[in-house]
Image (cartoon, rainbow, N blue to C red; front, side):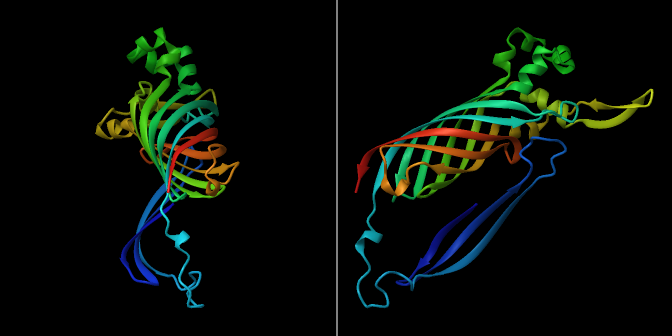
Length: 270
């Protein structure tokens, strides 16, 4: 994903500064997951000689510079997959719902904020099956396995609309994600293999709930690609999309997700 800002503008060109972000992982659907995040800052020069009317001597069409905007409400439902730890390394579902509100400028730049709700099947099963860490440290979870397997939070989003396609990035704040402390203990401890009658098994020593845990528990992020059934350049009042996203805790993959969404546009201004 790339973002650019024009720092110096001329009539036919511009000097831009850009920020590029690259994430690579398997989406946390199998462990070990050797992923990486990369940020790059650069400066580029944009040549605008191919603007319509430049070589003909005619003025550029004013339509290129007309600013317009509209507001939107959006709702989505998603189904994702992830794995819990090296010991619980099978794929299970993550179900999510989200509502958002925002603004689209020039049919291209989309900004919004909203709330999300998620339910992790791995978390639910670990509690329901009376996992060791829950029994020893968080027996309260046993009273409501479904409730303690859920996640609720708020997010802000930015999206680049390319007619039928959209590239979206979100940053969020987890208000409620109680089971993540168990997730952290399972994954950030030390794992080693022992043998019992020749059969290998994994021994896991728990991790500590330090300041980095608090940061990753609190900050969520989301990056993905959308396909809109109606091109956004037509500014439809009603639109649907399908999407594929990687959801993360801070910058580490949490789960991979496919979703179906609805967008209602209103308050069109030119």
